[in-house]
Length: 209
Image 1 (cartoon, helix red, strand yellow):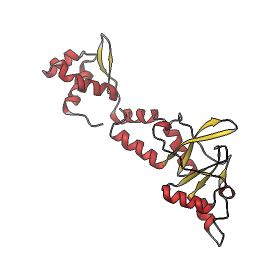
Image 2 (tube, one colour):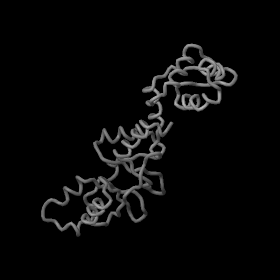
Image 3 (cartoon, one colour):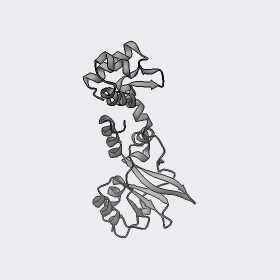
Image 4 (cartoon, helix red, strand yellow):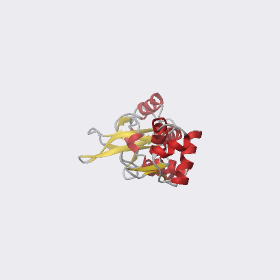
């Protein structure tokens, strides 16, 4: 987070004199309390300062990088997940390839007739199936898909960092976001490397402060 000169001055005053009231900070800067209110609110919400009633402002002692790390550790999957692209298990490999191309995704989630997760299709799965002289319109995806228990999943209340760690460890493009259902799991979202990148960009722009 890039601070203005006045915000840097406020932090230094609080470091040297804290706890200190907003009125006293304003006096040292020859400004009114109302003028400083937005700056104090930003510094408090960002975590540089803390405030206590009838005590005043004090410096938290945390650097900008530490504060960014703290915010990243609080992000949940549900804040960044996107819409899942789902195909049924009896769909042909040809149709799955078309769906992946048209939706511009790297992973398809496969469901049964009860809309429960039964498999995952990656680019590698479809590429492997398309090699040779096989009739792709006659091969159902349930023959080539990755099945449970080899499917790596996440839930919407999981920490984003934990989900990102799964992507790295498993070397996969995306995770199905699931919730418990009768006799299985229902797919309610997807989390990909693109979602993780979006979180980092938003963090850098302070959109979650």
